[in-house]
Length: 530
Ligand code: BGC
Image 1 (cartoon, rainbow, N blue to C red):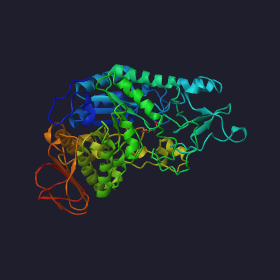
Image 2: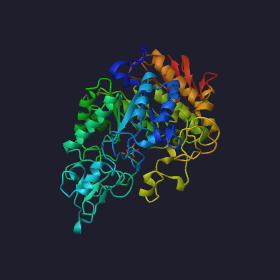
Image 3: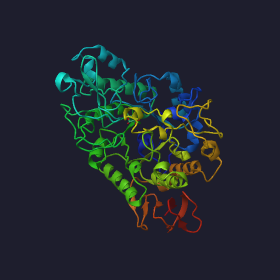
Image 4: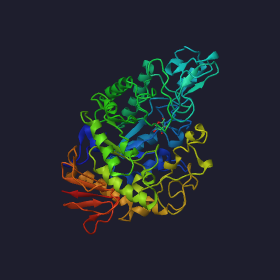
């Protein structure tokens, strides 16, 4: 635990610190490499803590660093209570935690409850055991359909392509909503829930401040595992709604209630769920007083760059949390989706829009998650076929390129790959030529850089009383614009109209573009004190 930051009128302090915190997602493989193997690690994070302090984030979410064969780059966990040697060891983790806390930064880690790695001791024991054994009862083993049980038990597809079932030599099938190397656990088995609790306590006792819960809408499966409505898979973790029986089964809430009872024994800790459920009411169920403190709201991440779409995203996200104890939780990018610079058109246009989107995201009431590299305005990088690593590429028969493009290592300094990310030039995903101007070092000294914009935005958010209050009032705005006011006096205007619009009355606190003559240009946002 760390002491509260110096309280200001605008900040939430004490055990509810997360309500308006800015979290920073460290995708560990791509953040910073401390041991020179071309893959990021815990030592790399320690070395780059000063960057995070200067940036002004409140907390980290570190993606899985547990022992893993890396079939899904760490989301296939072989032992949830240890550290993958390529990333460091427990002593390194403890040192990182202590240093982050000393710097005033909280640390949250990934919890991956839905599945394990196929190399987890439990799954190895299940393979060695016979059908109907207690070892198999921790996973979802079933007999197949059709003559000789040669057909999978139901029609569910895997999120990564192909069927969600694989057959073992004795003829049974096991369920894996993701890769075959990620067998799903059976949460109706009390041993499974008890083990999740043991993992939580293991990290909470070391002093972590909370968890990001992977596939938090998974875990529970409907009785009898009925066929789902056949549907086209539209991409990783898209929410297909009620006909998709793989996710959002009502039984999942019992798991979240259990998670919450454990967290409540460690005051000041929290959990955010990765809940790909787009219906406002269904999503709100995860935020009941005895469940998750936060759920990512992916509506901003999936919105088109238009005033209608962006406003809709905000309206629905706020409607979701209304009537729950939770604040909204805003995300523009993560390690599973194209980066927003690229989504918004790439190049100079994408960067201009991404700057404006940052001011929108950080002006909204609630918590915000930044993905490493957002603060540098990183775009996606299309890699050649032979460099692709994401299991989606192979599983989809090369129909889907997967998520590597948004996972390129972070450029820190210099003018050539690997830009200070690693001591070697070749990194686990190759870094492109031409990223010199995007490095943290190059941007730090430039007041017009994306990094300078983020630093200024986070400093204001941390210290200015205009950010007080959790509500938002929409203001009249020109066509193609969004404008809202926070109770503390912050006004945010976003212009997506295709034209200049006049600046409203008030003192300009920060703008994503130059606003010299009383106008806000297209694809720009401004913060004003009303
Ligand atoms: C993670 C993905 C991962 C999947 C399976 C997702 O929610 O964000 O990166 O592949 O879960 O664990």
